[in-house]
Amino acid sequence: METLRNLADRKRLLALIVVAIIAVLVTSIAIYSVYLQPRPGTGSTFSDLSGDVELYVGTEYPGMIDVVGASLQVSGNELKIIISVRDPIPNLAAGQDAQYNVTAILQNSALKAYEISADLTSTGLTGHIVELGESNTTTCQTTYDQKSLTIRAPIDELQSTKEIDWFVLTTYDKYNGTQLTSSGSDIAPKDGYQTTFLKS
Image 1 (cartoon, helix red, strand yellow):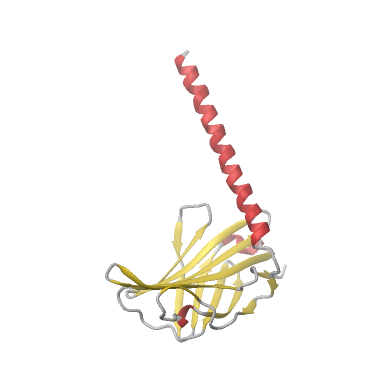
Image 2 (image 1 turned 60 degrees about the horizontal axis):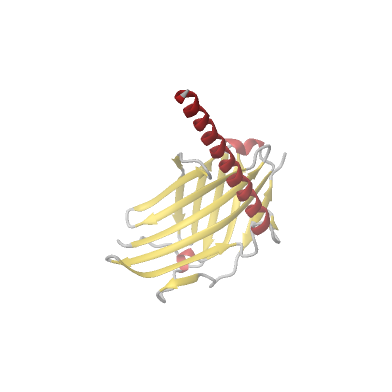
């Protein structure tokens, strides 16, 4: 009898977990629909205003994360994103960190979203891609030259994707020891997200 009661309790707990997961997914899609949908731009490229980095700490302006434009290209299962910034991207010193993040939402039979990021520190540049809601992170190719940073991310679902909604978020932090002395971010485009329609 005790075993049957434990089994029933486990089934009830599993049902609650499933309901919670569904609620999180529905809420995520609702937030996407309400907050990211306003006034999207269309096309594979966009321009963004210069000088609009939001500073949180300090007065040092990080022009290396000031997005002035971006482009997206798809070739087979590779997503290529080029981010253009206001000032040349330097080699960073210890205590400095810059991130260039792209959120890409693939519209196909199943809505899938990916976080694609390039992280620049004093030790170099690394790239990662992860499907939102999943824990498996894989590396991707990243390069930068002067005022341009390129990310090449392999995504299997690209070949069946008709539309990609995407935006760029960059961040910069500088520490002196353990004290944060400079911090800022830029999001582009400012009016929601960019929609790129892919050829069928």
